[in-house]
Amino acid sequence: MNGHRYRQNSDSRHDPRGIVLLITLVILVVLATLGYTLTVRVSARRHRDQYAVDSCVARHACASGMRYALATLDKLDFALISRPNEPDFSDIFALTEPEYQKLLDQMERYLAKNRLSDPNEEEAKGGKDAIRKKKALLDDINDANDVDSGQRHLARRDDVQIPGPYGPPWPLVTEPVEFEIGTAKVRIEIEDENAKYPLGWAMLADDKLREVAGAGWTTFCEWMGYSSQEIAQLNKDLGQIGGVKPFKLEFKPTTTDVEVPANLRTRTPTRPTAGSAASGTVARRTVSKKPVSAEQQFQQQNKEFAKLFHSSMVNSGLLSRPSIESDSRHESALKYLGLWGTRQVNINTAPRHVLEAALSFGSVLNAPKIAEAVIQQRKVKPVEDVNEVKKAVLGYSSVIEDCRSFLTATSTVFTIRVTAVSGTARATVLAAVTREGDKIEPIAVIRD
Image (tube, rainbow, N blue to C red; front, side, top):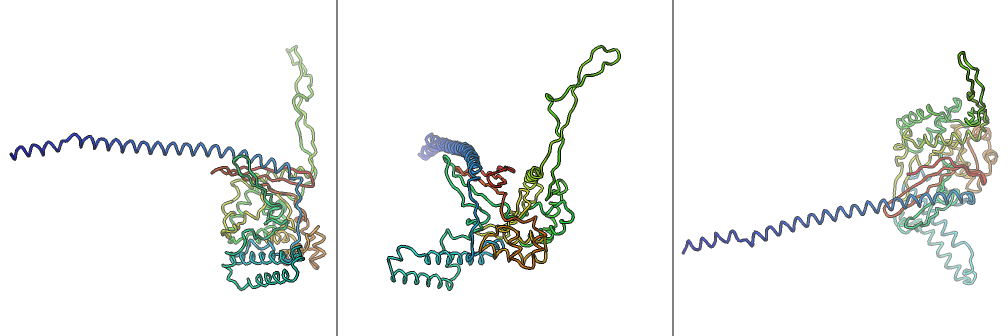
């Protein structure tokens, strides 16, 4: 009887149903793994295909946005504004985050007072009650000075910003334009390049100006927080570029040799050689002189340096290193550098450190005093020409005259930045142009 029971237990160990169940589980695991792998691969393929489509849409939208911007650029009015009582943009680059937030609080109170002080139709109808309400609001604004700065920052409106010389934040000359092309969202921004430090100044070909240019460049770099070792490294890199192509400020009309095309060349009969009865003609190489104006040479230099300044020869890693970075702003030297071969700085639109660097060509010692006087003057009314500054800053007219060729009161070089976003794809195109009246001349186009 015990033997019979043993045989039953022995047979149960080899129950085919258990084996089938185990095999089924293995098959299900394998199928699940294959299904997951296939799903992941299909999803990745769809993502790649969609990104390729979005990238194509973004690039085409970017190109369309750039064509639109270039076509309408001559119709835009880049008018400077007066800012007599508003916080100025000149020193934002050097402000700490608490100082910057305090400046925004000041701007918000200024805007609120302007809104409340302007007469309107409702106040005229409301009489004394409306006036009392307005005075109460003004008192509340004045009492805001006693509130903790962190609380004011949380309660501040999102659209409060420090206006630049044209109204929008520096260095924009107009409010950004946004629109949609298909599934792409396009944004167009136009920046004033004459408001930035011309990087070409750091590699001038003129030996007489090289020393004062170096002093101005050092002032700019020190404002941006670079150490003496970092400044020396930047000078070394820029010196290599200057060795390839020296930066010139003045050009004289000249001529260049131009070879006449083959179909227009004259043909000269050849003399038969001894033992040869045949005679023919050979083409004679002709060269003509083509006049090249100073403006054409200047435009050519702009294009050449646009390529050099956007090449690997420039230490963009060091120049783009953040000097101040927060949720509200990103400051770096690269933001304030002109990389398109500009030669002059606009005294109406340049921030303090750029203005000081330009005035250093007249006097390194007096540049800070003159820059402060110019900043205070242009807040009340934009400066029309350099002679106006000479009259306003008494005692420094000779200094300003010495650096006149480096200053301007009207910007002529602008950067158009077009950004298009479609899905997860993003495309950016930069174009630099010179604009004098209705005449627009492209300098270079860079695609990201």
